[in-house]
Amino acid sequence: MSLDRIGPFTYQRYAPSLPSVDAHGTEHRRHRVLIAGGGPVGLATALGLARWGIASVVVEADDSVCEGSRAACISRRSLEILERLGAVRSFMEKGLPWTRGRSFYGSDEVFLLEMPSAPGDKYPPMINLEQYYMEQFLLDAIAELNAQTPQLVEIRWASRLVALAQDVSGVTATIENALGRYQAAGDWLVACDGGQSFVRASLGLELKGVGYQGRYAIVDIELASEHPTERRAWFDPPWARGTTILMHRQPDNIWRIDYQLAAGVDAAQALQPDQVRAFVQTHLDAIGEGHLPWKPVWSSVYRAGAMTLENYRHGRILFAGNAAHAMPIFGVRGLNSGFDDADNLVWKLAAVVQQRGAPTLLDTYSTERVQAFHVNAENAMRSTEFMSPPNRGFELMREAALSLARRHKGIARLVSPRQTHAITYEGSPLSAESEAFDAGPPPGAPLGEAPLHDGRHLTDLLARTGFTALCFGHSEAAAQAAARTQERTWSALPCACADAPSGGELARRFGARPGTVYLIRPDGHVCGRWHAPQAATLLAAIANACRQEGVFS
Image (cartoon, rainbow, N blue to C red; front, side):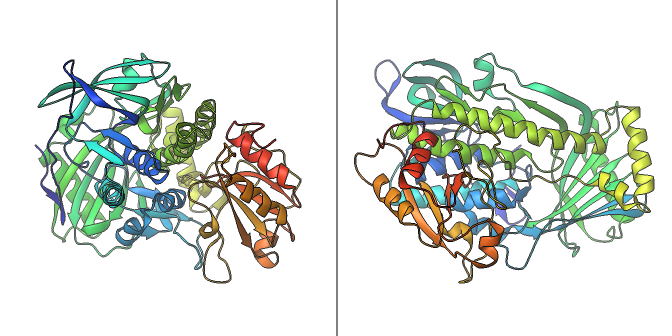
């Protein structure tokens, strides 16, 4: 049964539709990009492409945004991505920022997580926001773009892919809904259709990696608590021996409680209303909030896994989000890595569609994001083995660490949830040969954030649809290179030139001196850096990053 509302959030239901088709049931229009799945990653991909002027059609099986909190934590890196998408304001206005997490063993606090944060930061390390709000805010941003340029993004609700074929020129998808069935053709298909991806199954592909046996129930409750926004974790609490419990505050007095199910417990039975009520009431009683009125609003069961496709590109089909990989919830790397997928993919696909990048550029999407998966998975698996021990050996190790953590700060670090962080694409083929620096982000690393003396932030200087030559002081060579990329004969992506202060703390932090240039990719990663580059050096780096070598010669 579908939900009508959660707290003040009211669900809007969308009816299916049929496009204009020929006598054979094939849609008259051919699309540049089809997107399977209208969750956060699919919507972010569509919105990102629209910012580049690329139209897309999103095919979504449900008739509304998702139910329940689902992916409820958004990282600083994801907020930077949402800024590039033009959607971050709503996220920041509604989301609840937090920097601290507390872990308890029994009744004792044994670890305090403090994520890096300073008063001048552009964004907090993390915000909590239910996924249905995320999807709605992305839809709102899409609606604003469509009001300016109609049909940049078309969403086909309550429709699903039922067959798929591709050739060297594109993809043909058979789409079905309550009104009928038709075929839609596109030059490219981006599969964002989740963990049970139809696209992945239709190609005979499987995720490979580690699946864990431990299961967690997820329960959203409406509770008028005044407790601050922070992550709380209880290991083996007296009121639920053998269980781990997590609790997060979300907007609208919605609280998310995740708790481990014992081996052998039937998940369907555990989610029976009386079982959920008994567990939650016992927990609230134990933490001093059992006197407050509350009610459950959504529940589900989750099993951890760290698995991935070996390649995220298969001809004209590209995979992103949970269709490409599965990540444990611990450390909140699931949706945040999906946003990173979209951010990496969008500019590359836009470059290829606009013939400003070679098709081989899309191979680097897979190379970089598969590498990112393995970096994420290494940390996520450590967190998962601690949060949900796979065997008795891991249980004993965890018990020893927890019992010693209060008295030994070094051991207490083992309790850390290892929160998600931005990934450096080490050895990326898109990174240019650069000079040695004493400090600052190397090629492949995200630029990072820093306040400027005029109240702006470093990333405010970056172009949204192109490369940026970030100059410390003025660089005539960078200005010449940027001007060259605006000429009609230039066939790679354009580059803007932006000046940052050439001295002070910012320059020291980036190892810069007057004339230093950092070349920044459209997704905010460093492409290359030099102390006094020639224009030809910058142009060659841009051409290489678009796989369009030789375009400036």
